[in-house]
Length: 191
Image 1 (cartoon, rainbow, N blue to C red):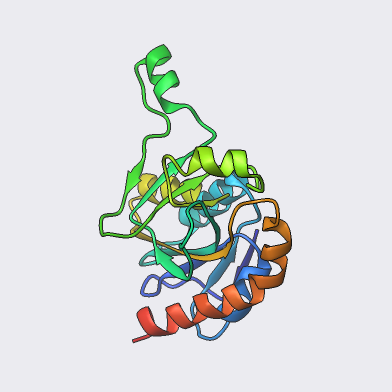
Image 2 (image 1 turned 135 degrees about the vertical axis):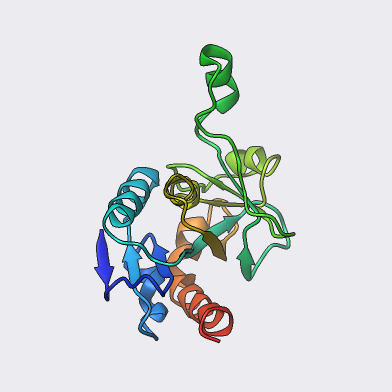
């Protein structure tokens, strides 16, 4: 976990998983929290920061794999789920929900989150039945923000097609993805 700049109650906090995703976000006075990869790192980092500070809102920016052909560009997420937690099974066992979908509204795509980097067609096709994009942190950040009562927007830039070439594609495109996310911040947050 690394925090760049001071958190202020009148500014949103930008949240990313990796320094590579933050490269083009250091364009303003906005604070940037780099959580580390995966749901646990993201949840702990966001919960820790929200326990100490009160930003006006959170904006989770980052890369995501496309689960369907034709998805590209910058996407504002309308719904986030977890693909590696069986909430329905847990509900059957306990009568409690531990990972229900989190709705943001709007007409954007559905993001699903899990602790594995999706890079095979079988997993991609299975996940495409429930979501449009996949990442490794979105749901954890959304859950931490919801528990703290802090507004959240999730914005994901498609970096790969979540298939066999995903790792190579991500490595080659992460800087351009960060540039596109920086452009989104300039156009939508710094007005």
